[in-house]
Image (cartoon, rainbow, N blue to C red; front, side, top):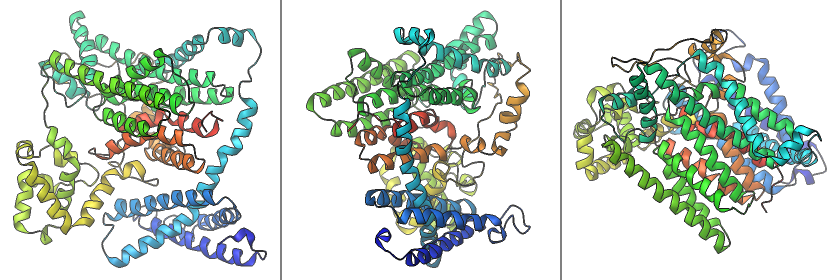
Length: 608
């Protein structure tokens, strides 16, 4: 209905009142799924809370503005965004607090009404967000390429790369306090397993070999000089240099594009001061170097697809180098590069541009394959447990059925499941974490009996499709659920030290005690989760939804070059959905691309 064409305001006012109240009721129902928390009136019960009145008023105001919109395309795209958000909140809430989404037909119908009710508020919110870049672009156009006329900027205009070096130096200096406080680095996550491969000279391809070798060479240098901690610091410094160089290159790109100085300063402060970045910069995880080269590659793709820049040979060379290193530093990243590249290849016109990109993509894939084979030959690495990793999602699905629906499951099928998954792992099934199921799965049987495994998975799935769907939802909800979450939904960033288990142990020293209490409070004791606003940006959901809303906005504005560029982070996110859990470090590459995503919507680019 075109409400902006109706002269009488009363039909619109009545409908807005009813829809706003339905939205409040829907939020109240979803919030009530959380059985914990304060039991006093006004805390646990949304209806007794002043916030329900505020939500009603805000929803009514947003709906009033939404109904007056004349842009049909904006309304349609906003509705899609609102429905997606509604589905995420409702299904995420049921998965997280009830752990049983499709328990009855009546509950399923109720969930559809809840999605509709929450979408009533989320849709006009999306419409407001999609209109916001248009207002900022006017300010942006006035500020673009306006710089103070002083000697400093005159020098930078003559020597552009000095800006890059300056930003690089500032970022490195900003990370030195946490490096000195946690010297020689934050030895966490999978680092001890990778270092054990180095110590026993038995490498595997389970973790990226290039990353294992970088840590190993630094550690072995420490052994030669009689201090493995001093040797290991070389790896941490190298990682800091690479990561900050990627951030500096983004700032350099913004400078060349004439991005207003206040935005560039904001981006610099985001990278320099937000605790997530310095914490990752010193943490021994492959995801950090992957994020650095992901950002490099994303900028090259942005210049090619959105800015429509004509690349010189050295730009193509830089793009190829970034793509190869990206694939070598995270095993799933090369699939995102390949699939997104094929989609971009279908989009590109004319034939000359298509040919140049095809050569670039083929060079990346070929060089990655050659380098990977060379690393395997150099280290004599073996490929362990590949089937267990590949079958992580099907194994988790079957474990859920065997754990929750054992009484309804045929005994023969249950016994066949136990051939692939150990029975004690079924009893310890964790809906948020597949490691407890896949780590002890029968690798040999998965390799030799793959066809029968898929037949079993399909047979059980046809009998319990709801459990399969809920298994995928709970295992991935840490990426897309925007409200409260538990520990396993999104692994924390933490400062700690895991032992290698060898005679030469990496020993930490505090060379900057002035800042140690600050970082320990935030990261060692995990108090960043309690800080409003800051705590939310330590989660996966903001960066995933920023990507989704950017892609929807590109559809609304017919910015198809930006949409094609977004295939790279979207395909990478898709590979993470096939992983064992939703950890922030897995998608840290999306977090470092956040300024580029925001820039893509507010800058008046050359794309038609």
